[in-house]
Image 1 (cartoon, one colour):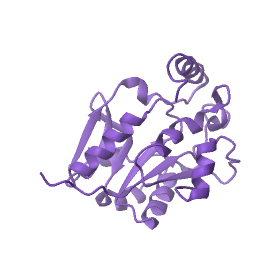
Image 2 (cartoon, one colour):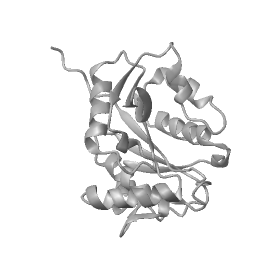
Image 3 (tube, helix red, strand yellow):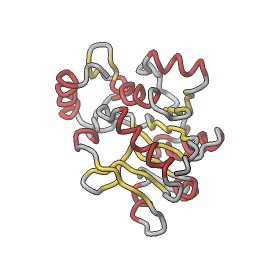
Length: 216
C-alpha cells in the first residue's frame, strides 16, 4: 500500500460571533476557574496535527480569552490572529476572512472550528485529518451528528471559492447539501457538538466540564 503524503491542513477558528443571545462576549466566559470558554477548543486545535491555526476575531476583541498555549504558538508563528472587519454582517464573513488567510499560508485543506464548542477533543480532530489524508478524492470530511455534517470539518480546495462567496449570517452548511461535492461524515457523540449560545447552555456546559473535562 502506498502511503499518502500528509497534506497541509490549516485550522480556521471562528471566534468573531456577536454573542447576541448571550448578551456578552461568550469567548471570555469562564467554563471553569481560570479556563475561558473560547480557549478550550483552541487548545485542542493547537495540540492537533494541524499545520497552523488562524483565529478569526472581531476588531474590538481584547483577546483576553486566549490560553497561554496560544500566546506561545503566536510567537512561534503557528497561530495567528485574523481580524474580520465586517464580522457583524454574519458568520459567512468570518469564514471568508479565515479561508483567505489559510490560502495565503498555502493550505491544502482547511479545518473549520467553532470557538463555542468546548467539548470537541483530540481524537475527533485526528480522525478528521486522518480521513482527509487517506482519500484525496473527498471534497470534505465532516463530523456527523446523526448524519448531519457539522464542524469541526475539513474543506478541500474545490469548495473554497463557493464558501468565500457566501453572504450574511450563514456557515457553509448549504454547500454540504450540494450533489457536486463528495464527502465523508464521521459520526460523533452529540455532546461534542454542544455550542454555548444561551445562559442556560452556559450553566449546563460548566457542569459537564467540571465532571468530565477538567483534564483538557
